[in-house]
Image (cartoon, rainbow, N blue to C red; front, side, top):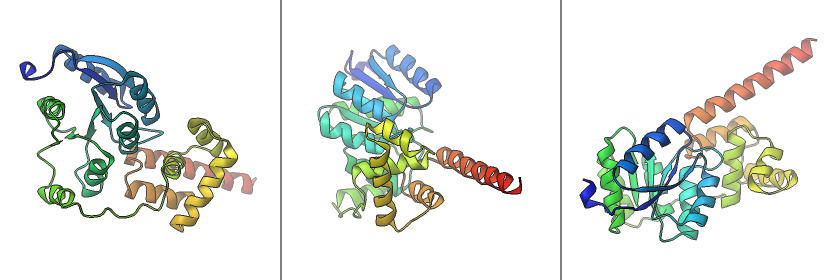
Amino acid sequence: MSSLLTPGLRVLLADDQAVLRQGLKTVLRQEGFEIVGEASDGHTAIKMCRTLQPAIAILDVGMPLLNGIDAAREIHKFCPRTKIILLTMHTEELYVLASLRAGISGYVLKNGAFSNLLEAIKAVSKGEIYLSSGISGTIVQAYLSNAAPASDPLSLRERQVLQLIAEGKSMKEAGSVLGISARTAETHRGRIMQKLNIFNIAGLVRYALRNGFIAEKAEDSQNRKISAKHSNHRRHKRA
């Protein structure tokens, strides 16, 4: 397999699971790749790609702070020569079409063999699109037919703020992550609620989950935080 791949190809890895990153790094180095950087969230992945300009960026879809699809969209914009491969458990049309429209070159399912990732690297290095065999052919046809995507009511900044809200970040924390003030983050939150006609945090979390902003684990974490806040509120009222 390795003889078919470009030796010394510069690769960036982005996944919030350190164990998975270490495993990928070990095997890819054995195959002759140069791992130029590692990131654990989408924002860091974008910054590292802009600085390092890797040939390949391998991104997990369900990263914190900024998901892999939105990170891919930004990397494709600012680093057009970098080929992007997404690693994911999702086979749903929502994720696959959004990823292709974001500019990715490879979509690899995590439950597949590691050889699938090597095949993806080989394909995207030649300018081809690689999709794991578990992806429905009807989804591919929908993309190839150039059917117009459903319009997204949110701007990129609003999508970023929504993901951070869904992950349980306060507006101060969201502002710090995005380099904006808490007041500006609150303004974005207000616009998000108006555009989506959703006026509570639990509803925003459900919207974020349905539309691929966060994975189940982030929703569970947020739900635990909401439940804890309600429990504390009830205890205070009894006191």
